[in-house]
Image (cartoon, rainbow, N blue to C red):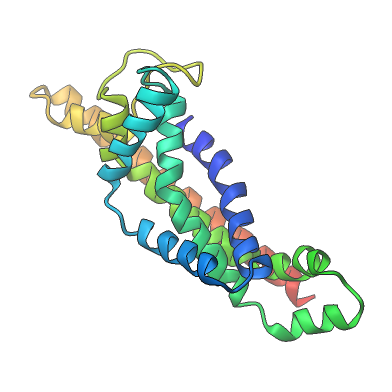
Length: 216
């Protein structure tokens, strides 16, 4: 649930921000300052985002309630710069001749972005999204700060329920002296690896599909 909510909140905003900065924003000081801050945010340690999420989302927005939604918002802040930067690089990689040809046919700027730029950039954008979500799946520090739970005995059914994530569960199981917990931890590690491999396989498939469509 954490990753699903993170993707729902991150992907549309990240792609829209990248499109605006690359295609619509004027080349002035404010735009360059925003771009510089986005690049700097991509290198901030994840625990800093955890503290930020604790202060803003948990303490201020949800009145001290540590919820699944607060964790998803924190992870969204963490991976948003990655999605934006990857989307910008994909948009920049579209040849200028494609835009020029569309403008020569009378297309508006939005039509060029929608019908020419985005279809060509989607494969690389998807790769960046998969990379960002893969990082979110493996993060433990911000979730530990926001959630403070390393073990739960129930399945969250609401965005406002308490929660934990699989990496924290694995750490808890590995630290237990009983062999049964270690076996469970090994199974959880396999599940985590399968999830990451599945996401990467989906990214490869989507990229290949769009590339074939672009060729035609």
